[in-house]
Image 1 (cartoon, helix red, strand yellow):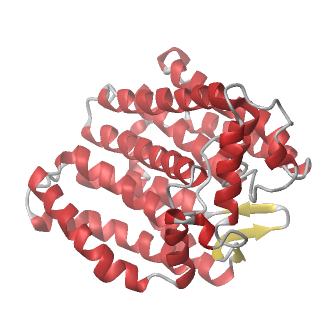
Image 2 (tube, one colour):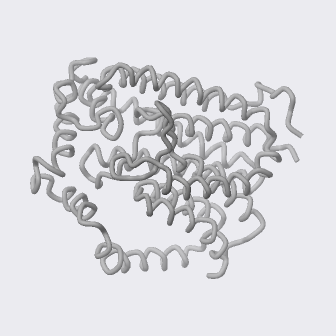
Image 3 (spheres, rainbow, N blue to C red):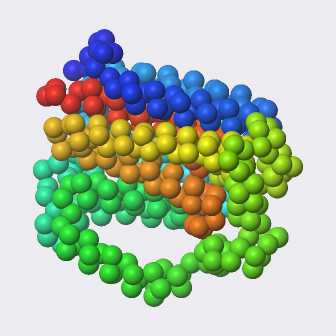
Length: 359
């Protein structure tokens, strides 16, 4: 039964502090990076909704949460299918429900639903033989398939990495991991690369040489690296980044928000921000290890894996060492759906850790 009054002393307030610090810095940066002041207002509304949702989730119990795992997973699949029919295409992907000024990306719900379903399903199922992967695949492939139909390759990669972390924590045999890596090395040049769309191939080639198309696909990568490099040790000052303020950095409030931060706050600011993310991820994995139940460890580890993967890819894109994927920087970039869902997910993390010793 859900606790009527959550025990607030049982929460991990260190995690709360780290999240609050990153969100606060994100708002500071957005004040400089946002091309329209109204975006700051919308992000504030999203923050309020995300905090409210995270608070309301605390009145659930861990048992009740995992009891909702399969219904939540099923609802997320339905929404992923529905968005292909009635959703709006934004930046080349039909991935959004739009109602007036409100936008919702069902991917965010699907990530949480899939993690809960996997954690519940794998708790009593060891992974030792090849056919033991059937259940994780059965739960994962519909989500990934629907994402690729949008198409949202970045979202699909986030989901796949989160699933990998869950399976790894569950007890992935090393021989299976080595065989999988070998198979991946064979499939990428023979099956994946030939089936990529022309613009996707170009994004990969741009990483190798952005100046092959300096005014097209390579423009944003070139401008991003110029901005990061020009920040120096202490940066150019708040609101003084020339690359950002003169509009040379595309999507400077979403995909390339890190470039704005690096230009204005320099190496010192970058180290501070990356330090906060490192502590956040370390704390999430520490909370996972502190949970005696396997299902709790799987959910928390999978959530941390998805969050960490998104951080690494976003930074890699900004630095020009990874192809552009459209993934934003969690808790830092502009994006209402992402902020609300991430705060809700962190609320679930706090809930599960709070109830880790309860039946």
